[in-house]
Amino acid sequence: MISILGSGVAGLCVATALMDAGVEVEVICPDTAPAPASRLAGGMLAPFCEGESAPDIIVTRGQAAIAWWAAHVDVTRHGTLVVAPPRDAQELDRFARATRAHRWVTPNALEPDLEDRFARGLYFENEAHLDPNAALTALKHRLLAQGVVFRDGAPQGRIVDCRGMSAAETLPDLRGVRGEMLEVYTPEVTLSRPVRLLHPRFPCYIVPRGEGRFMIGATMVESSRSGPITARAAMELLSAAYSLHPAFAEAEIIMTGADLRPSFPDNIPALRRKDTGFHINGMYRHGFLMAPVLGMELAGLLTQESADAH
Image (cartoon, rainbow, N blue to C red; front, side, top):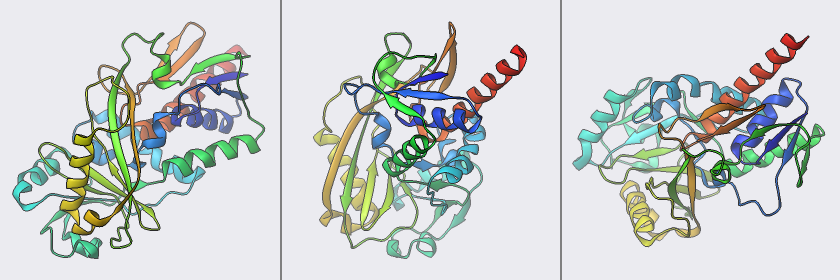
């Protein structure tokens, strides 16, 4: 029996990967535990775009996450479009040099609602996106249908700690990176894929959630301060959305959110062995990309240990 601590994206992906490998699991999720930061994620499965600022290990290993998610939940595979206002055209050139697996496009050929606001853009055809809350709910329901128990109380088996910031007391190099987001509603804009808007100070992305809903995110603030979204973050995110399409000025704000991303010093999510158990943590901004990958890695380790023991 493996006892998984935490039911955010890391915990649910690890539980699913282990069950897929035939390893019996339970999920420990106390009623008093804070809501996981992954509920506020953009849900972009964009390993090639992440190469703009992330090390190559994220790009290369993260590609496996797209097929993994598509095998378990609903995933939209329409790629990612990256644009920049004319005054920031050099940002688009810089982004192109820092990434791969893209091609230059006329943005309104992919997204007609953008009309002629952007002369050129980068299209990452092999990327995808999902709705984080719907995906996590689907994983949990799948695990429950397989007989996995979600409960409070002491673990009964070997521990895999996936608690994010709640594990900071046992991971002294774990820090929080504050992220803030908005969700808006407008029937005046139609997008079929995430659009990243580049800006030297506050780049943002807009992810369609269906039925006129859009997630606008997300700030990256080196701060461990929790609490609601700040006025500054809201203004910057809304300003960026308005730059993408003026109709966002009349959009209804239906949700705001802020939380701390658990991060290691190198910002690379990691599987760590500790005593007889494991930690999977430090998801930073790569949770939906790297949690399945680390879950599959752990499943391989446990399967090999079992084979060696026999």
